[in-house]
Length: 487
Image (cartoon, rainbow, N blue to C red):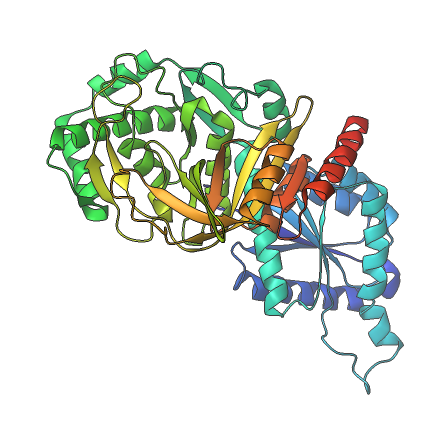
């Protein structure tokens, strides 16, 4: 990823004189410098804007600067916001309105008209907020004192969502073959997705991959085998199966890197010329930040890459996931998430094991894969679906647990969780909303961040929480359907 930064743009006017403006510039630089020490990305003070032209210029500069992931504005005093219209009308980067003030307290002895002229953020932020509301701009409003930890965390979380937008806008997905035949939810309008989200989704023949695999050297495989040994335990004597996965991984990485792709998909129905379905190969690529989608699901592949980038600096735990089966004992209701082979080891509770077992599907040799149990902790699962005419992002709150059963004969990576508001109501809500069987599970990215991301991308967001009921969701979906058809 590029080195990303955010720009701090302060709103003011000439009315209060140069001394006030100099003081504001010094304070803004101090605020940006202090915040940069605690935020996940630098906050760069750019300008105290006093005219339409200054604002238009800084917006134009932000739009074309690849390192700028978004702008954060603050109005230290009354900043007449008609001057922001031209700039805001052209803004193409995420925007956060930070409603704060330099001083924490009202100084009883010092407060006079000079103080008021310099510190009218309560006034200026309302004027500034109106114009964004009037223009129907997607934005994040964060209010609070700039030195408070909870406020800084909210800004940092928004920054990570904005970085997800930057990644999305440049994301390329490499499809090895098409998606699984006759599956509905993995389909989608790639032209609309590129126009809306920026994704470039294209297909490469499996035969091209096989040709690159054939050119992989033994020395390259030996080097990757050492990386496997450093990260995983070997619980198999079938080294040829493991080496074949290394060959697949090296070839897929070469092809993706050559095309600038950060996500990929494949399907067991198109393995022409391949001896194994990539398992360990896909898992280890995901551990390096690549997104993956099984059965040709390019949407979940892209979302995995984006959410891994959004969670950078956390514990790395965002992974391709699939709901497999349920435990429906009263009072002990759980979902078991897994996949045939391809769950990212970032979600492992302990050190993963490399094992080789029959797959029972695809008609190829027994593939090597990582086997492990998932971490316990609060998380979300996310699904992006094409509703025909618009995209819908569905997010559900979950609580991951140590699997309640050892499942000794299930040789796959697995995660077990309790869904909000309950397993059965959650399933009813998920199905009602049209959620896919493939998801991205993340311990690092929050539902609020996914809502921010959806808002920045101008797509529908559905959140299933502890308070969601089927009836309320049905009503919300009905109203949303009407609203989005009017957009």
